[in-house]
Length: 290
Ligand SMILES: [Mn+2]
Image 1 (cartoon, protein in one colour):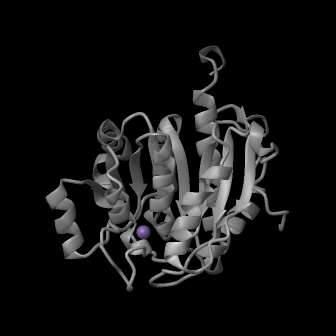
Image 2: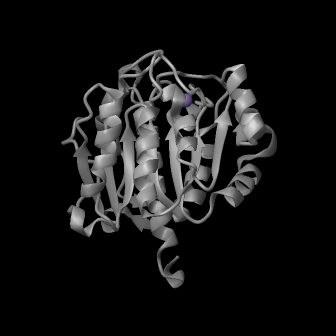
């Protein structure tokens, strides 16, 4: 099963790329179980399971222009990693939509900051956890602070979906700010589409989509740092990915920890990345070809 470690169908060079894969193998602030530094390469290996042709969107991924930039060297210090991520702006091809593979969720705030250099972005976070602590485990750059640090960047819109865990203080903080935090129970009761309709109204035309993989139910995605029962289904997450993809300026997929996997979590990560690319590529075809 082992393949050379570039994402499947990433056959173009950076200067021709429409989509650019970048791995961020960082997991130093993991609070329960670490291992997500192995996420990028596990997802790449899993990507070889799938056909280049996406029949649902009628798009061949070999044709859309994917490049794989490899992994950033992030070390173990959260502040230095944040700086290294911000500095990666220089080698992400300007016209490409970046797809970031973590690594823990703490990589997301500097990635959002990076994407904001081209203009404001609304941020949609899929996550089991609120991640609104100001500090955790001695650092403000913990993965348990990811959404708090995103909010520090003052995005014009923010919403999170799939929530089912947080401290009382975090829920109070979210309520005080009037944040749009959709719980996984609400998704089960009201359906993902109606809730996403409301979230999208807040997010504008340029959306950064962040998928902390623990948003999924552990039955489908057991290999995450902090598994939390009663999560979203793969179909619900795919629905979000496909609806957001046409307006997305970037995607990240974080917290996949392959040491706890029998392969299914990494497979789902690779699948959702491919669904994102195919759905976005389809949306950009001339209308007659759709
Ligand atoms: Mn989480």
